[in-house]
Image (cartoon, rainbow over all chains, first blue to last red; front, top):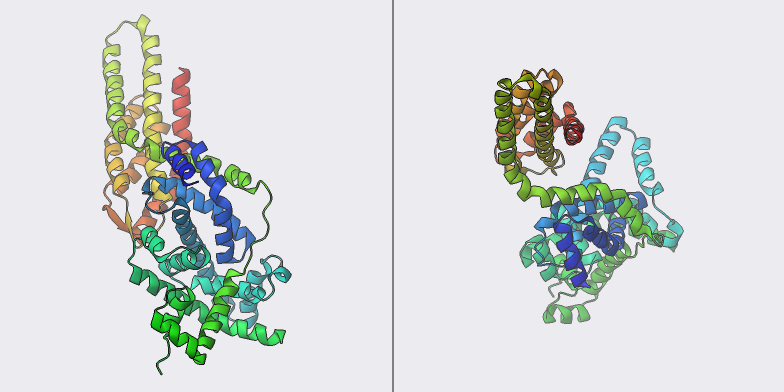
Length: 198
Length: 236
């Protein structure tokens, strides 16, 4: 399977779009699963898939082949999502500041929640989805990327170090800080949801 | 008894726990409960399942990015060529200038044909020049912003393009093509700005460069005028 990627990458580097198309067909679903879990929103996830592959096309000459192509691609996806979430959070902050009333803030949160698909299918995670975007936006680029690669992608610390060009200690610290920040936002909500369920 | 730290619990969740830590977790109810809470949160995050995608969904993804992705790939694969191209274009332009000089001394019967050839050479040279300028402008305009941005490759190419641009602008002005001359003057200002920028620019400096390109719609104009020139030159 990896050799198909290798052949496709070699073609893409020569400027052959068919080579790149193979990579899109082989990896776009995995990238979508990742971006959806990071944003909790179908439309954002699809936009991020496109953005990820466009960035990958521009940067494919920088892919050195030491990590798996999928890992490299997921790092780009995590960075694309970071940019989107950061832009959105700062826009929402400005909106909340401008309206300066609670209704305004609630509306912003309602908009985030309204875009989530099939909440009944997601059971407890409705509450998490509502908070996912602001929670993820609190992470730094590095924290988000290593957390996503470790938690959602199940990549080993060694693989993460390879693709992120960091030392194991730095990767572990980033994962820890990401978990800390996420817990701070999500655990009170999860507690409320659990109590409601009881 | 010393409980596991939050960092140790996080590592334990991801399966990275020492033998001592594992033994402690087996015997300590407090740490076990802490780990369960942590696992509950992280598992809940993981449990978010994306909606089902249509059977040929990835084909739609490809269709929507095909032209832009292809342009991105071409740009990269074209790099070795455009690093050499300014010198070739300069030769073409010089040949054109020499042709003009010779043509002034030729008889009027050959004049019409020479003028036709001259226009063709000029248009193709202009098209090539604008194609490479477009690469510089697009790279700058699409560069992701960070605290420091390495634009040395674009800066080097812009430096080479400035001289060529000047020559083309003067030729266009001499030939009475005021529109092309005005456009090339506009492009020259931005190329000079890029060429004189440092190798590594700050986020605000990068935004200023982007602003110069965007405010004049320069990338679009370069693309349109360049492809028109080339097409017209080929027809001649």
